[in-house]
Image (tube, rainbow, N blue to C red):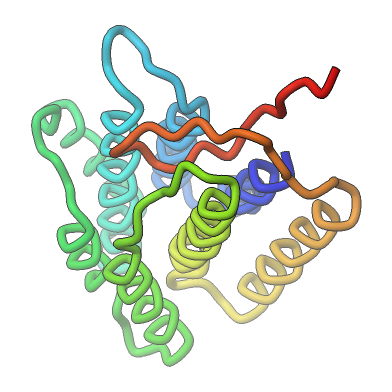
Length: 210
């Protein structure tokens, strides 16, 4: 449960972003959270495997990057339009290189944002290790995914923001993860369910000892 809550806490500050963002970006953040929730379920649906929903979530992340770009350089009123592309992107499979190229749109004359975007691109390109089916390999995959996805989502939340907003996001981000670490027990499953090609499943059951 700790790994799952750590991962979920990455997206909680987006609720604050929804409150303070212009109306166009509010819609974009809500749509991004919706597609993220679909992947968090980590279940097959209507005959589609989990990896299909991972690709859908990645498509929404690319749309979110374009939304942030349009909001900063054009107008917030048109920032939700990129999500219409998901309707026609059913057969488009995104790899790490495609997504890392999209992050280049977030480069700006801001040293803090340049560092975050660069780290996000590096994390995408370095995340090539598979998910092992043993408990030790599973824990390593969980830690890697939480760290890399946390960095990428943090980059989106802090893009084009003021210093005050960035500080508040960092503080809430750290507090949430610290509270989860203090108040939840570590995950130690006896067996690991791992489907080849799927992202790591954070919720693993323990075998009965009776």
